[in-house]
Image 1 (cartoon, rainbow, N blue to C red):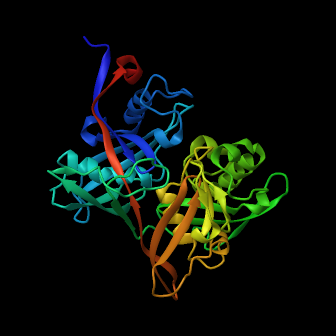
Image 2 (image 1 turned 45 degrees about the horizontal axis):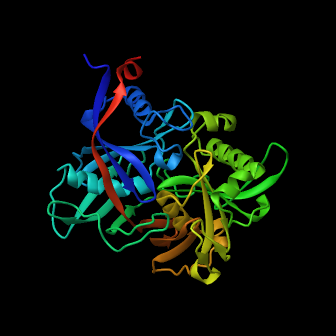
Image 3 (image 1 turned 180 degrees about the horizontal axis):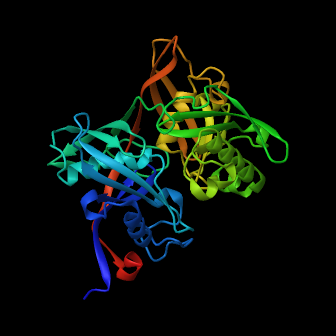
Length: 388
């Protein structure tokens, strides 16, 4: 009798993230059983994830569970899982836009959808948020094409461009673009300080804070931001307050333990020249604003796709801290294109929207990504770890 359990899976790079993709019928149906297997496969809890497939940070400790969909408006359904690195916890809240770019190629390569050339459209329904994403994937010889000349910030090599459009992304977890009904809020911290921020829900709920009041420029690279323990603690406190305000947790002090993944928290600042992680010089006139994201308590090494979608949506909201920092033109009847400067470079997002007496409505937000399969096969995990 084997002392290990074998689970069929595939490792994909999706955008600037990396994770493991599964067919839903290869995992237990209930969340608890799935969590045990995911923790064992990724090697959590362990800061190095040395005994698993995880890459020792939140951007490389992700899973997508995919199944054919019975919905008339979707081809496949996806469930996102953020596997905690240092704690025995799997967060099922929200979605990952970067790993969403891998779902279309996975569905094509697994034979879940009918393949058309030169590109196949895959309609994805995300179970976590109840939202749809339309993925257009280049194909060749019946499989997703990986090679191409499209480059994204944070990935060293070019690939085939995958177009993602998040349709009607507002209200992914709260039911509204502005969960509190206001474009900005005043957060009162435990030490009495007051900070202005904006809670926006598009693709994922995010609380945005301006860099200046935190003593930041906004151009800090991830290691520099993480070295600012005071700012990191303040951002986590703001995130907890926002989580309480929009009903994700009952007490702000529980946010880190009960919902470390959502809401997200981001820092924004007006355009400013700086040098990227890779050493490239970015000029102020080549961007519309500077953005930095935190993910699971650490600084995101690039910029999350759902974060870009939400930042784009926030940039069209009058009175938000994002709109205040952005210089992107916002004209009625025209899509808004926002160029977000992040640690690796520039990420563009295109937002289709309209405004009427009921407020601002985000019709869709699109972004280009690349993704490719790194490995297909079986993960071997100790039987005792999944049967405990």
